[in-house]
Length: 278
Image 1 (cartoon, rainbow, N blue to C red):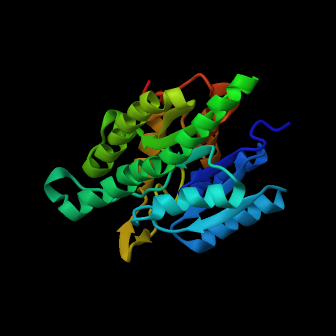
Image 2 (cartoon, rainbow, N blue to C red):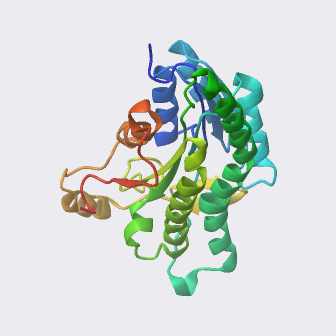
């Protein structure tokens, strides 16, 4: 049997990059997956790739910062597949500046997408978790074992170590660590593990080599992304593994916390960074 057979996983930001790679890995392990992305087309592409491999998935396009998103997201898993066993808060983007140049709008945007959205999803998931824990506690009298459920939050080495001119992003990613540890304590009695993976340099569109005006659009605003070839080469040189991580590398680190083998691990943060932070 596949290790996640019968589980339902919900992943934000799963239309591209590490999120898409994770959705495919979860499906390959037998989970039914709710695939979120800001844009509908990438979400549908990931769903199609899962279906082509014989898996089950639903697309749920939308902005994680939208009021009501969290409730609708959890409901999609519960109503579409009958549950919500694994939740991965992966959606996000970068809008960098130093402290003197960071506006309130910029600060709020980083907190909203990386931290507040994860909090809202946790809050929306909580009633279902409590209900299921109570039902399973009653069943335990008949010998049933409580089902393990999991949340994994995607942080960054910018949150664990700080980063030059990434004050809003770094603060939000550090906040996710506090959220992770607090939820691990609160939800432990419900049989829920809560962990975080802090990514280092992962090769996605946010870290691509700059060619002209490389940018992404979020909420009608263009954000410049990417790194110069010189910066990338310097980062590779500082990494013990001498390379950046692939989306599959990043997804593999997250998958560890989704599998039954990690059922007794909670409140932990691992850095998937090629050894930079050791």
